[in-house]
Length: 290
Length: 236
Ligand SMILES: Nc1ncnc2c1ncn2[C@@H]1O[C@H](COP(=O)(O)OP(=O)(O)O)[C@@H](O)[C@H]1O
Ligand SMILES: [Mg+2]
Image (cartoon, rainbow over all chains, first blue to last red; front, side, top):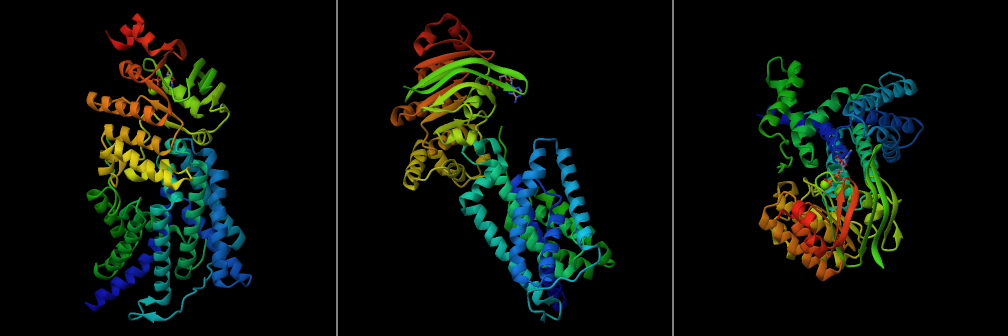
């Protein structure tokens, strides 16, 4: 029983990573009505920027703040320069653009900072808790995720800007007719998504270490968590992330040979959820009438 | 002076020209109807006025040349375009749809007043205010579309087939409300319709659009008396 509880808590700690990314996925989905497949690589690149700033002697939180701002600018810039020109092209061209972005960021990071694995510091105390399953960093990371969640939730639910952004993504023409500057909203959505992704990267890098491929599996879980939780629900995405972490961890401990099957079980969870609730656990049902 | 003055308006989709030299005059507070069969170019005419298609010609709205303006700028002249298909934001609630429509306004008190006004006109929208707009019936979505237009505190409303796809009773209700809006608020209206009977009852003047050209214009009464119009568009 105690073991179960401990494993659940450990799962929540891993889930915090996925939750962080799921939040960034939901953010961009709200802003452009699509996934951004390059999101993980963008976050990885931002994390390198933070590492570089600290290597130059800046404190963690100063580097954190500057990287956040850098990522805002990078997100808007990428949209205006790379994605906007292809936004009316076919879905295939857009996917090609996303994949190109992924490759560019990956090799850019590899070229500038080389492919060796680098340690990344944590701003939180390294005390071990709950029988050494959870560290101060885990709790700090969960706290940061929850703070961002509160911010994103407030932004979309109550702010005028958040409302305009959701409208611009759902029905750009109609939003224009309400006077919303659609291009600006999309650019802002990219900026915020990149910034949230950068926070996720800076929180995660302590655990997985910094290297150009650090995001490959994490971003997969991030997408999965967002889909399980509901793409239009920031809180759902975060819950989905924690759920995925717990399921993954319990599989590893209780299912014979489970450590090999972790990913399989996580993906199975997605399929099952989508079978019974296509909009995700917390997503809103949209009934379309004709 | 005319509130909306359009001279020699052409419009294109890509290389295909769809409107040819359209002239339209709408007086302040007036209501005009643009009639025409499916594919005549009615929707394109409204989209050209709002700056959503490539166009050329003179457009003056409330004294301001508007033929070079973006849709976002045309809205800010006080033009509320209720688009074909109603332009509902399906995943926003009814109330959020209305809030969004008032997004460019600065007068908070006026916005509150208009919320009350919209809910007075359409109590159904009030009942469903926290429901996702995508779940509304066709008639309710049309009410919401008109409600959104009102939230803009418009000087000019462009309505694209407000009767489309609605049951006869709902259609009549909508047009009665449009009549009331026109009378009580002095907003100018340009109504595009295939349902000529409803439109000519609302409007004082009308235009007939055929394959992108205005082939007839005059008072609503002269339209009702015109044999061709009657046979083709009124069906008696
Ligand atoms: N997006 C578009 N691209 C190309 N042609 C279009 C487009 N929309 C409409 N058309 C064409 O323009 C003409 C006028 O269409 P429209 O303005 O929608 O007519 P109406 O609203 O009177 O039914 C039609 O021939 C139609 O096929
Ligand atoms: Mg039409």
